[in-house]
Image (cartoon, rainbow, N blue to C red):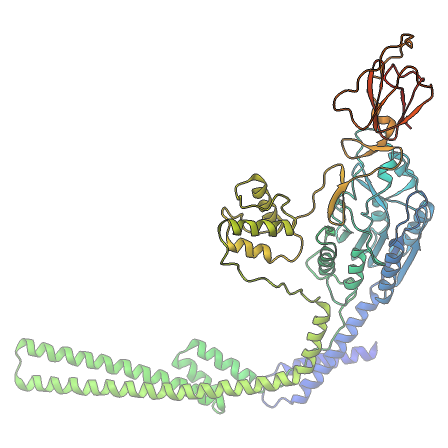
Length: 638
């Protein structure tokens, strides 16, 4: 510490001496001062980096016990853990395939590390669920038979926010947990009004300097990925720990990569806010300040530029009295001579004007010839003096221009010398910035199709609208359909364009062709799901069926609230079987009264008996002789 104090005192003394613009200053002292300041800067940077404590808890759940296994959360967690360890984090706890008790224990242990930390991060990959606006992380042993079981079997997001609250500078939660949740299909709702959402719900942190990153926007689902890592985590490990890269830019670059990898079907989102300063997870590498080339004329040049802005003879006289010799003194003298020549020209012009007016006045008043001759002579002399002053001014301006060219050339040489001395440091800085900034994808925009018009132009526009996912109608030359107008509005909104075109134009076609990927998000109905960029019918497991809202419910719930026919005494009269109704669904099975009791008819057909016909739903069956009201058998469903 004593050595550092001595260096600081020497640096202060050198800095004070360098403020003196005297020409007798030794340039070596400036070099010594710069070296001392560089040493102090590196020491301060290293001290701040050492003082910052960064901790992280990484959890990944793949081996779920009561639903199908997830492929990538384990790989994602290991990749994130390795990334944070390589970035120099003080604590990185990795937990894989943990149950509810282990998750609670991991959070409790991690809270001790957060107590004196500057940066705290919690990363989770696996299943998550939203119930009534509250987000939960699901352990591997969760059953979730009912919606209220989440209170006991899952971990609420609010608990994680409480654990990382003591961190001083940054609190960050990363959730790669927006995957399509299989628990939703079998979970019972204890209250009909309790909502169980798709994906996770939007959350706004109440503490400052807190960010919560979702793999997909609230209410949407994320992809687990076809490779070893999910698209979201693969992008994060690429950008999150780059030295000096602001955290918000890192998430922005990751968002762009995910959109590209998923064809605009998954958009990561961040909730919370940070201040105006950059917040990198890994500090930038401190570089010593560049030592600029010593310029002994710097103070003289500044005074010259100041006198030039004033632009009066007095300013130039003051400059020449301060700097009587040197290159800039010659420039100042040229500037002063130019001003003197301009003043002489103005005076000569005024005298010539007055002489001409005097000559004209004498001629009008009829003065004597001798007086008029004298006036004419004076006017001629004044005109000659004016012409001489004009020439003198032109000469001084030429001299000044030549001097200015010399000054510019001298400044250029000095600047090139300084740039050559700084080139190694600037090259290293540019190379570092190139490493921090991801390469931008070059978008090749096709040439405008100026030859298209009328119906051909409309058809091309509809083809391009369909290609970017904004139009699903027929390819024709009708511009005025409601479906066409809706698709154009969808494209304008998704592409952030200025306005919808009222008529088909080649400029609009060029804008469509300039989009290399899907623009409009895929919109599926309540009874559909997205698969490989298309909407397909949602399927339920055995014993479940889709209701009108698109949820899978147990098959017996389809008869809930529907009055079944009352049991009736079996008729002993042999009535002829009713004729199959027109439009009966599936094949028709007629049950005559003489059929053998106990005959089983599988679902998906229409059965008929002496009193009428009935449709047997899929996954159900009809049994004759079991009391079917004469409709071809009694229906049984699982």
